Length: 154
Figure 1 (cartoon, rainbow, N blue to C red):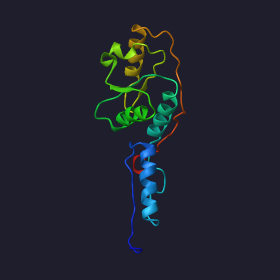
Figure 2: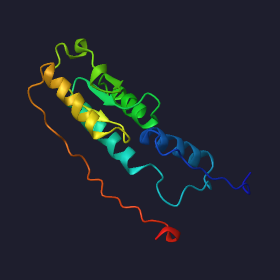
Figure 3: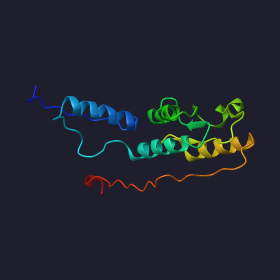
Figure 4: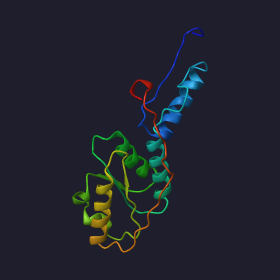
């Protein structure tokens, strides 16, 4: 129906690649469909997904620090798997199974956007206890987004 008005929005923590495929399919089927005025994928989500793609090229295992009910953390684990790198979602250092590390020479660590930095540091410390000898930190894309307070709160 050409006169039907259609629009879409996306959840901010979906896989960026999956979202692009869905939007492309919608646009192919409904050329007049309207999307958001600006990209509504969270910048932290985008940055972390890009980092996992890059990290997966260099490591043999990728623990993802994040809660089991975190959409963002689950997408990171799934994405690593799609890139061919075994990944486990862990709450913290106590979830690391030493058997995972057998024969591995390069292990990456990433975290969901809501995971506290202290947990990431604790996971790295645990990996050192289990034999990691060198740690290289990748800063990724700088996140310097500032959100202005609504006028009513200024």
